[in-house]
Image (cartoon, rainbow, N blue to C red; front, top):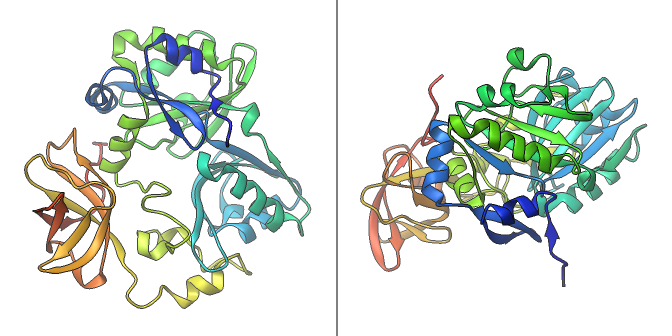
Length: 368
C-alpha cells in the first residue's frame, strides 16, 4: 500500500479549509470555496495553485543536450538558456510515457518537469536513455516546491510581493524562465502554466514555500487572488484544450492521434526513442482527439460513449459544463471519418443521447 504524501503547503491548505483528494498518492486540495468561484477568479483576476506534487528532474553535464535530443521527441539542444519547451517522452512503440515541460536553465543544465503520476517512470527512463552520454540525471522532486500564480493580474501581484526579486520579470516572455530570489532562497520563475491564462510558476525550496504562499495571498487579496484547487485547474485546462495524462494521453496513444504531431521533431539529426514507430504512423483505424460542444446543461464525462447515428464511434476523455462559456464541452477520441469540424455526433449521457458538434480546440483562448 502506497503511503500518502503531503505537500510542504499542507498545513496552509488545512488552515484555509480545503477539501482534499488523492492525486497520484498525494493528498492535494481539490477546492477551498467552490469550483466555480475559483475557476472564475483565474479567468478574471488570479488563482494560486500548489503544484508541489509534480516531478522535477535535472539533466546536467557536457552532453545533456545530446542526451535529451535522443531521450525526448523534441530538439531540446535548439532552445536557448532561459527558454522552455513542451515535449514528449515516447515509448519505443511510439506511445506517450509522459508529456513534459523542459527548461534550459544553463548551457549544460535542463530541468524536466513531469506529471506526478509518472515521476518515477520518467526519472528511470531518463537515467536509462541518458546513460551512454556524459551527463547526470538527478531526481530533485523532493527538494523543490512548486507554486503557480495564474490569471490576468498575476504579473501585477507577483511584482508587489515583499521579498520577491526577479530582475527581468517585466521582460520575461511566454515559455521563458529566469532566476530570482524569495528572501534568501533561490527561485526559478517561469512564465508557463496549465490554465489558458497568463501566469507564473515558482520553483523554490520547500522550506520557503509556506511563507511565499502566505505572502502571495496577502499581497493579492485586493486584486482578487484566491487559492484554487485541482477541480478548477481541471476545468480551466479543459477549456484551454490542454491534454491531461491518463485522460487524453497514455502509452496507447501516439502523438498524432492527440493532435501533438507538431511536438515530434522528425527533422532533427540522429535517432530518438520512438522515432521508427512515429515514422511508421498510427495503426489503421486509430481514433483522433476532437473537441465537442453541446447545448443545455448536461455534460459528457470521461468514458461516456460517442455515437455517429447508431454507430458508437468514440469515447469522452474529459468533459464538463464550461464555467466560462456556459455550455457543455468535452474532448473525445473518435473515428477519423467522424472527426471533421462541424460533424454532428451524440454523447450518451446516462442513457440519453445529447447532440454535440465537433469543434476546433481550444474551446477558450484568452485575449492578447
